[in-house]
Amino acid sequence: MIPRYSRPEMTAIWEPATKFKIWYEIEAHACDAMADLGVIPRENAQAVWKAKDVEFDVARIDEIEAVTKHDVIAFLTHLAEIIGNDEARFVHQGMTSSDVLDTTFNVQLTRAADILLADMDRVLAALKTRAMEHKDTVRIGRSHGIHAEPTTMGLTFARFYAEMDRGRQRLVNARAEIATGAISGAVGTFANIDPAVEEHVCAKMGLTPEPISTQVIPRDRHAMFFATLGVIASSMENIVTEVRHMQRTEVLEAEEFFSKGQKGSSAMPHKRNPILTENLTGLARLVRMSVTPALENVTLWHERDISHSSVERTIGPDTTVTLNFALNRLAGMLEKLVVYPDNMMANMNKFRGLVMSQRVLLALTQAGVSREDSYKLVQRNAMKVWEKGADFQTELLADDDVRAALSADEIKEKFDLGYHTKHVDTIFKRVFG
Image (tube, rainbow, N blue to C red; front, top):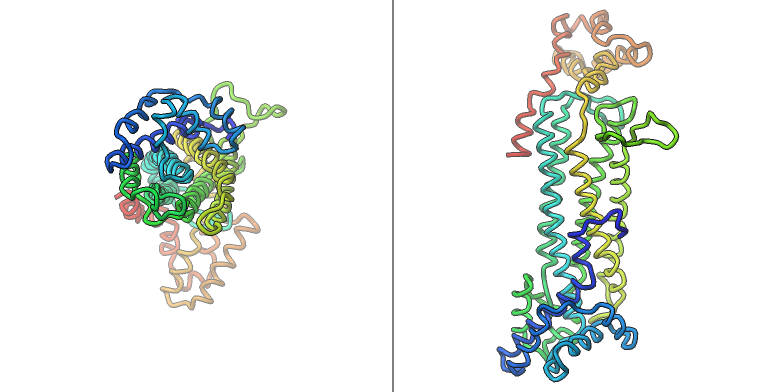
């Protein structure tokens, strides 16, 4: 991912130096376990740890790989240069490259997941704060982009909180699913390495042993991990799409914070554009872009092929780096979002009581009018509001058929905003506990 959309903590996970350090730790722990089993001399296992504080020379490894055409062999050759050929002769014994590569990849993904979980905590905190702040701030709810019935801004934030909270739990589960390692040999049979080595390495690397691997860890785990990131990205886009709507000039119920000195347009000095939320919409697309390749990686030939390798070298860093950046941008946008309650109320009243039509409909049915007739009575008055800018309550009060069923006080009572917000506390308790 380009530096513009990258944060140092996440990109560090995917740096070659970090990868080689994990490779080294896996190999060193494996040697310790083999020494414990009496398979290799203890002094050889201890010698491997001489490289514990060494910065591996990435350029040198690349130089060796240019000849060997094999990255793991290039690394092992460089390690032998550091600790000595004789001391290194038992390194990687009974192992295959995927033991190192797959276990490392899962270490990286679990570390990335930990950062993303912290990012989501920041988003959730911002959503909860704004929900509490605007719990009773009335705004119009919309369906199909059209005014529906009153809701509150707090409920809008609360439903986004609940959605992101579900996403966080999915990521917790996805992290657990991806946190496996395999040190099982060429086709996963442990023919040349004891299962105890795998157990030792996994314990040291914060993983659990893969119950059954071939030459690789099964890719359905990775597919679920990246699918989870895709769902989180879609939830993120769900939030920012609402904000983009609210910032439209003719709506203006909320807008992104516009800092001093900020410019909205090179041509039009008056512009204040929703650049953060539009950017987040695009970043969500990039995250979701990894889902299909991850699903296609599940199918591999026999015990292993490398058709998944090039995919994962790209989607591993790019997807986690992008989502890390996006979640932090989302949190910052929410924390500073400017909300306009007066504009919300003005929009609510734009069609002069029209949004109370269902209450009148239900009252007529309760008064003995058939639902079909009730609907016709309410709709014919509602259309006058749409077409002529009439006042809905005034039209109802002047309608003899409506008045035959409902008194003036009964009609006026149906325009009480408080009726629509009476269960907000109940919903908040369900969401926030």
